[in-house]
Length: 253
Image 1 (tube, rainbow, N blue to C red):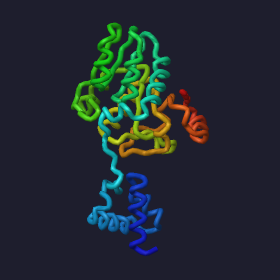
Image 2: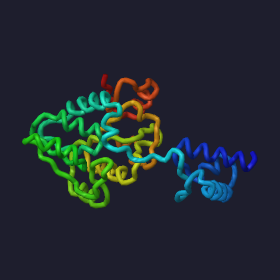
Image 3: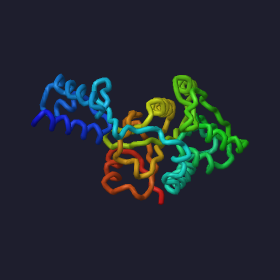
Image 4: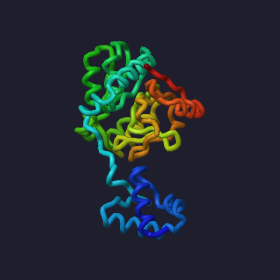
């Protein structure tokens, strides 16, 4: 394979996967890692990708955090149905986490006013629950993310370390059957990982469009997930693979 052709294929792979490691490229093209590093250096100078520690990241398809108001109307009917199913899993006296996803906000809207403790980093979730007298709301605090209207960063992560909950209800940008859960923003990914660590059970709330995709920042492997709540558009092969991983799958219409 000519050098130019290899470099063109490298760019295609990086754009397809969003990020890829030098070691993986070395195996794919049967060349040394040093050769791949030289390729990446040249391609970065041509503004075709960005080198990262141990690999490369796509420029063309780099994912940015979508503003909250835009996310609120994307797949809204599916998110509402998923949220309604999540509420059925919440019982009086539970101590739960709701993240800053729009689906979590729908959960907050649907929750009945009952004895419950909710830990959240979402401003919108906290405001929604403030109208329900029996629900105790704890906010993480931290650095304000204006796009997601939520708190992120080290302070938010340290705040979570003080608590233990029995159920976490989270969403994510991508759910890949081999590579696990991912998010477009590293700060959100780290916070969701911490949320999963302090919970007895983790419920992932995602519409079917999220399956098979990988966002930029890894959250956790699928083995850390207890249940997935999704819509009926999920394909049969994905359902089978999830079942094989011993993860409960709840499908809503």
